[in-house]
Length: 267
Image 1 (cartoon, one colour):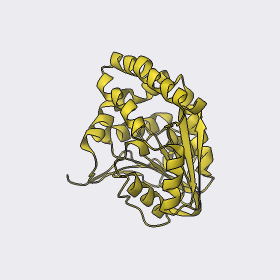
Image 2: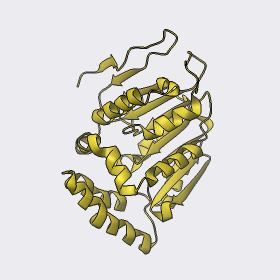
Image 3: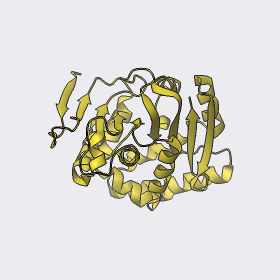
Image 4: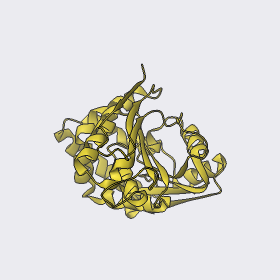
């Protein structure tokens, strides 16, 4: 697959950083990549409907745990349609009318789904906040990040690590590109050790998520959720993975009544 490099929008101010959408070769699970490409057009609507808007609260919590602040360079992995990236840009960027080169932080939204990145770029156009001008969208493989060591002041990942085949390699890459003392905040479904929580999750997937997705013609695409959670790591296992990778501290928080979880790992 040839590499493409093109601008999604022309810079409206000569002092603004030109933000390209870079397409690079992706070597990952093709089926999962195709799945996220298929659901991209309705992904945001389904998230709002299925979580009754609560996913926005959980994402704000994940961004807060990342420790991102004004002027930081931050990375949102498996960024999808850009929710976390937009929240990060509000923390690291400017509220002013113009965003000058070097005056504020930068956000990189990174994903293996070209369709999701296209949705994110369209939202960036429509929302038109000054701070959103410093978001760059890049397509690539989370196990082979394109960045130099110690590049980022904070990293987030929302509902992505569960879908990565080589989670150890992904964590190693997160550790590599994160600056010492900085944090990675990883939000996802919680694989609970409590049978009640597991039963509630599975009931919701079978009786709410899949039927609603069926109305969008995406039943098969959302049926994978149950098995993906079963194959995921518990909070304790995520903490262990982070510490074995080299992080100095790791804490997993159960949120949303234990249905969701957020790993906070400090390099």
